[in-house]
Length: 467
Image (tube, rainbow, N blue to C red; front, side, top):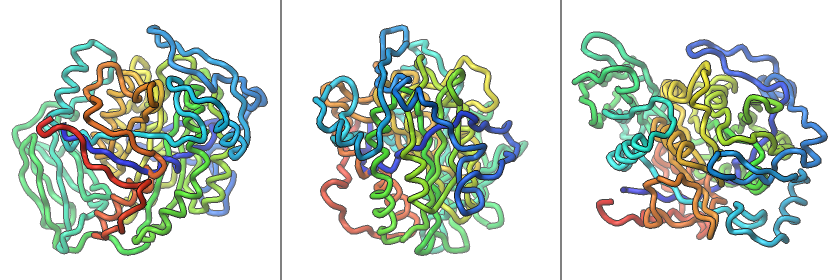
């Protein structure tokens, strides 16, 4: 398999707390009704629906902060873990003795590998076939017949946020938008019976072509693509903040300021805004809660510093509800002019047995329709069901599936994963967000970024040829 490795700053993935009021996504196809923000100076900034009300019990360690994956029943064990200020948490944990099997040790660098299932799509289909043979639960998602439409401008640069209409011989199917790299991913089997031929056309331009399932199509516009210096970039962190995520969140939350500085120093000088959607599960203090986008790093960092990992108790979490909320609740900028990136960080699968307004395959469609790329970071207790859902979300939106590594404890992958030790190297995760954002902007603007330091070097794929 053509596995791709990255290293980058997931540190910025540091996350803010959840709300007791919480937010919820509207039904698919409707526009959300957003209440006024409660904090922040700009319209839309702050907690949507009210700032989270962290209980005294949570702050005193009433949740399962140090929960680890339990037995085969899927239940998690828990123990008390107190929330402390960022600097104190990092310093105190750094002095603790490491445990190879219990996740990362605070103060040490998280490490990760990553795969791009769109780069080895045949291998990904083989993985899905093996997963289905296990009889494990999942929501319907069939990427067979995938068509990748790449749109470039007359200058050869990617055309971001361009509407691409897909029609079958007898009817229109869907209108997609190209993402930051100029690609739109169409998964025909997820819209019903696969047709023998489709027609793809850029709205408002003469660029059009016929496409057959399983092919890639290139369209060239009559206008230029790319983006100028100062391109708007919206980065949304979609975070599982149940108890088992406490260690990862503590490690990630201290670096958002450094990440913001690195992003600001990129050659593209992007206009970055950060936001976050947090989730737990039904029966917890909240299901989802969203902090709207802000360009004020200090404001975001302050909200993020209050995060407490609590709740959960069984393996599945509200991934469906959270993905829908992340797309619908925040005030995203115009996809025609702004790059849109989501970093989903979690360790548990969605409740596939639960009837929800918008299941994650529908949210994949929603992300494709507005050009959102989702990079998924799998943590600690990730199992087969979680890996399956996470990789579907990343593949369907053109993102990477990133998995944390825990030394002797292994990587955050399912028991039946097809990702072997030869498919990745363990890399520092400190630069994850910066690296992925930088790569996207380099492609969009045609910029050649100077060689980064050794702590943010992109490592070539290690898989054997033909794998």
